[in-house]
Structures are given as structure tokens and as C-alpha cells.
Length: 133
Ligand SMILES: [Zn+2]
Ligand SMILES: [Zn+2]
Image (cartoon, rainbow, N blue to C red; front, side):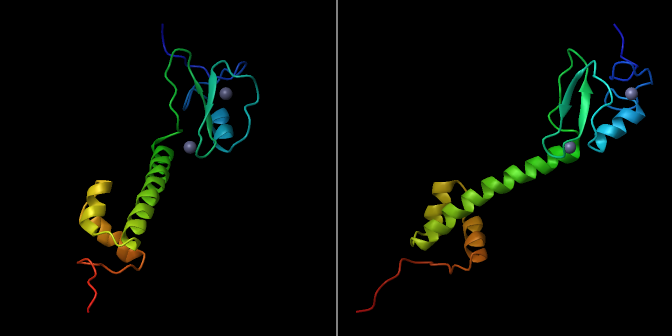
């Protein structure tokens, strides 16, 4: 046993600098360039920025190149789910539902409903509209 200290690229004997690669090969993948030789490890690439790196056999591969891309991905998915929720809130308000009813249905607070409704330029309807005779 022992840590691999040589670059992941076969034929490259430079010491590992980062992510199992030497300075030269790491900077190549970081700039989106292909490795110069076949890697002796599995190569993963980040779905957010496309940077790639080598993964030692038996090691668990991370999905993202680092915390920055993982955060970016989380923000993106969070935004997508928020948009869906916002659309349901807007649809409810436009249908004349009370904010309290919408909030209960979607599992959010009434202030969230009000905030989203206000953002979409919808007026709060505090009571069910009553027609005057
Ligand atoms: Zn190398
Ligand atoms: Zn990345």
C-alpha cells in the first residue's frame, strides 16, 4: 500500500501536484486540454466546468472538480425548484386562492406567498371578494 506519488499519466514520472496529476498535466486539464498520454487512472470530468482529473483505483470519485462547482450546481438546481414553486404560487393567487390556502398546499409560509405574489405584481387579496348589491 501507499499513496501514488507519480503523475496519473502513463509515462510521466513527475511528482503529483494536484488531483493525482503533476503540475503540467493538471494545468492542461484545468485549461480544458486533453492529457498528452493515456492515464493510468480513471478520468473524471466536472459537469459544470469540464475540468478533468484522475481518480485512483478504489477511490471514490467526486462529481465536481471542487466546492465552487458543487455550489454552482446546487444554486442552479435550487433556482429551478424555486421557479416551479413560484409558478404554482402565482397560479394560485391568480385563481383567487387565499395566501394561507396556497401556503398550506405548498408547504411554505404565507410571507413567502406574499413575497412571490408581490414580485410578480399581484395584489394581495385579504378576503374573498364580495360583490356589492
Ligand atoms: Zn504528468
Ligand atoms: Zn468544475
